[in-house]
Length: 178
Image 1 (cartoon, rainbow, N blue to C red):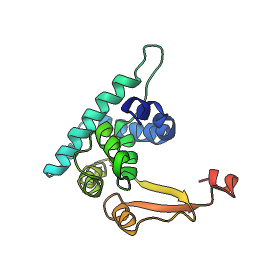
Image 2: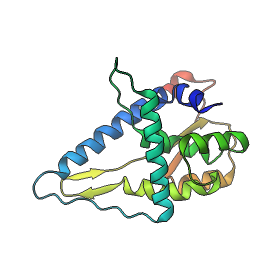
Image 3: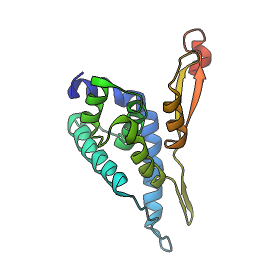
């Protein structure tokens, strides 16, 4: 899969609802930060967290360049797309991992990247005077799909992502309610 194919496959369609919610929440937090009496919420990152942000910024520029069109409005959150793909990247191997690393500008192999990204994810959760932002992650999977135990441990430890098992194959109507 090429970079163009990956960006074209429709990632925005799958993550649009999450992206809109995150943008609205982050916009509200940013707007509140300008009100008198509000203090900025500081975030500190270690070196690997800073490299993760640099990669996210590079991905954001690529995403906007490929997505923007003068004929339509555009509302996307590169942070949401990067986070979701980062969860999948943790389980990727071989050519898939190489392509994801290249397209997403991830600075570390799958086993290490999520640890660095965890620092970035922590900065997205904050409380301040008259404002609060909480980001949650979840993985929805077919109920009988096996997972590598190290993958599940990392999802819980670093991404704070819970695993929700649903029978997508036999109970589509029930699965679609989630």
